[in-house]
Image (cartoon, rainbow, N blue to C red; front, side):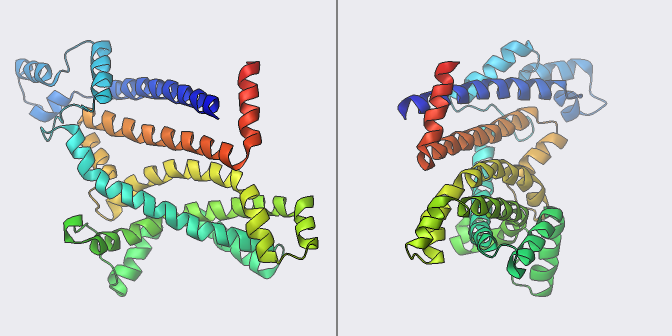
Length: 322
């Protein structure tokens, strides 16, 4: 197990290096000068040059990349061009909204998808199965931003159970903060829960056709015991795979959802930084999001090894063969 974890950590490190190079190069290729944008179109060339030097934009790209990476490794993400505060302060303030939102959406996805997928598998080719598959297909087809606006129309404007947008702040209490995140989390979770439920159904149908399931039933176990004791764990491998991918989808989707609900999270921060040409903020936030996705992928691989040790052994053997 230790060798498996070390191999995965080496892969993680290489992925981070490649990601940082791609992100820095992509930001460098974006047209426009942050200094010229901040000073306006009528700024004198020498004033723009002085501001570029002050912001550290006049150095060689390689030197700036190395300085950026070295800073991130020590927790220094640089200084925001627009707000003139450390980027890490901006990120931490916004992370207090985006992270709970993503986790709420992920928990809702799991709570909805797993029982629904198991129910559909146990009622295969029956009315309940057809109904669930129809609803999940609809959930996949509906864009989350459109569903978010429907939620606002129904639950905020008509029923007035929730606010239409904004965030009261955690200082006003945990209940108030979580309540403000309910509609955005539901909007994020719907399409992902629909996908995961269909994956769960397919995996469970495949597991329920195995010989050990028939043996368990022959021993007199109830259908619930068969599903939970013998079916669920063996069906979790493809489900865990999709969950790892969905984390990145939830982060990406939060950029749109946060703008729909006017939540001051990382999504709105990136959107504002792009419009203001605050490139150091864009680079740092995108790198942080990529790091989060890579870490989740690493944890998914560890979960594979815990769920099914055969996968761990096969990957180690493959690495030895290479």
